[in-house]
Amino acid sequence: MVDVDLLARRLDDAARDRRTIAKLTDDTSLDVPTAYAVQRAGIERRRVRGERPAGVKMGFTSRAKMAQMGVDDVIWGLLTDAMLAESSVDVSRLVHPRIEPEIAYLIGREVRSVTDVETAVTGVAVGFEVLDSRYRDFSFTLPDVIADNASAARFGFGAWHPPRDVSNVGLLLEIDGRVAQTGSSAAILGDPARSLRAAARLALAAGLTLEPGWIVLAGSATVAVPLPKDAHVRVTAAGLGSVEVTT
Image (cartoon, rainbow, N blue to C red; front, top):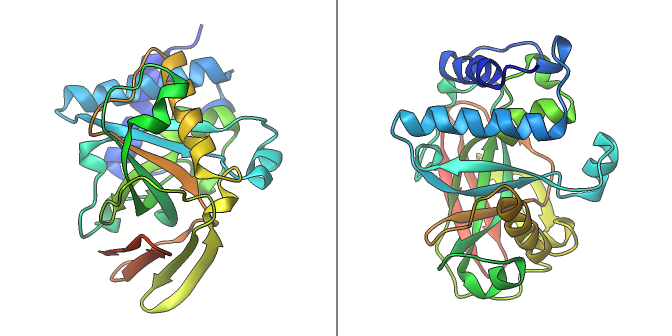
């Protein structure tokens, strides 16, 4: 019998203490449903400390990553208001900070079905996610990363724009004025809208609904790159402007 609360506490303590731990699967038999139970228990610990749910982040949204991890579906994690980085990220509070460009969706009303989710969107924006695995050497299995809330750490977004087709938007990630990554939103399952629908599907299956004001991060269009200290980062998306953050 897996002690879900114990595993959630192990991950939560590692994040709060900024230290690495061995993979949970090194000493625990962990399947995907149980890993999501650990994830939810970790979010509940945050909620008890006063954090509020703020949205959903999607992971493994590239076919190459799915193949690498031996899966045929995306994974997801939950965002809280404490993860929002409006202008800066204190990387000294993180273990393995990495950043990636994102397409962000703003949910305008409660989503009751997968077919309902696209019409519930009231805005799209360029965004970023800072990943931070708590596992030693950034090494993990599929259940490990799910339990660790899909490596969610921080996120941000630029100005909101009316809903539009973002199926092939060019994205540029710059660190200190130098190009770190370029890509297209088409790398996100061929169209970020597919990731948006997957977010609704997975949330509903878990007994959650996407709520007004929540953000959905559709997944990265490029690989994540290390986020250094004392850096200026800018993510630009064609037609959506840019978002900047310092460390």
